[in-house]
Image (cartoon, rainbow, N blue to C red; front, side, top):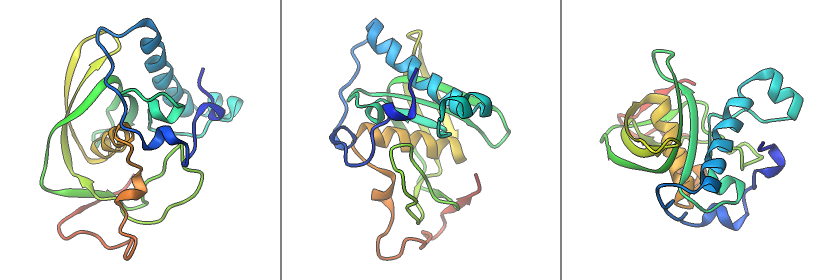
Amino acid sequence: MITMKDIVREGHPTLREKAAEVVLPATEQDRQILASLIQYVQNSQDPEIANKYGLRSGVGLAAPQIGVSKRMIAVQVHDDNNELLSYALFNPRIMSHSVEKAYLIAGEGCLSVDRDVPGYVHRYARVTVKGTTLDGKEVKLRLKGLPAIVFQHEIDHLNGIMFYDHIDSQNPFQALEGATPIER
């Protein structure tokens, strides 16, 4: 089971590397790593388990965040219709995206960042993501709103990009014209 001590913090070199593709079909070791990522996210959202093990709540986790430079992410988040989206993916990639941008009003956070970084992180309002599930099925997800933002945040980790790299250092709360503000 992944705990907070397993999550590497900003400054760790793995967070700035471009992660390697996972060779499919995945090895048992890679399947176990991916399963542990989604298990952490699920456990962190269960108040009883999170409290018992001292887990910081999160909606996503990428393999580089536990020091594994491979293209694997786990996301569990509710969409605009309060449907629970829960995915653990090998080699996720953004196939297409909207021109429109969106941002979280409260800003973004990260399990690998132990400080508040104020500012808007502009991301695509809609994305189509393809990836391979734990059981080897290829999925294509059309995402918008919060789920689209979370998937982009996690895929950024696979490319060595931190959320605060997107914040305008001169004017962190400058919203892009036409960008949609999203409440969490």
